[in-house]
Length: 131
Image (tube, rainbow, N blue to C red):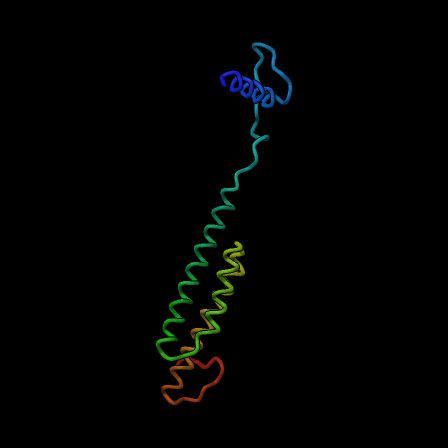
């Protein structure tokens, strides 16, 4: 077992040296900054920010749907849009997800306005303005 460990360690050292065995006392090649891939920290931060933005808009859409449901308005179209937004977010397409969530929020708000207008006896028009 110990022999196997030493053999694997020696093979790793040979591979680390570029496939060529090192002579005794020879130093391994140095790695420069050019050899290291650039950090994608900015890209990761942007993705995390987009994910947070999506979550904020989705929360707003959920709140608008709840308000519409309580007022007796139609919120089912918004629900479908929000499910599509969640699928886009799952696929990490946050721009699409944010757009769909914003549309869901707008549709839920329009449903609330329509329900409010209906209760007040106002004529209903598509996208009616808030009373």
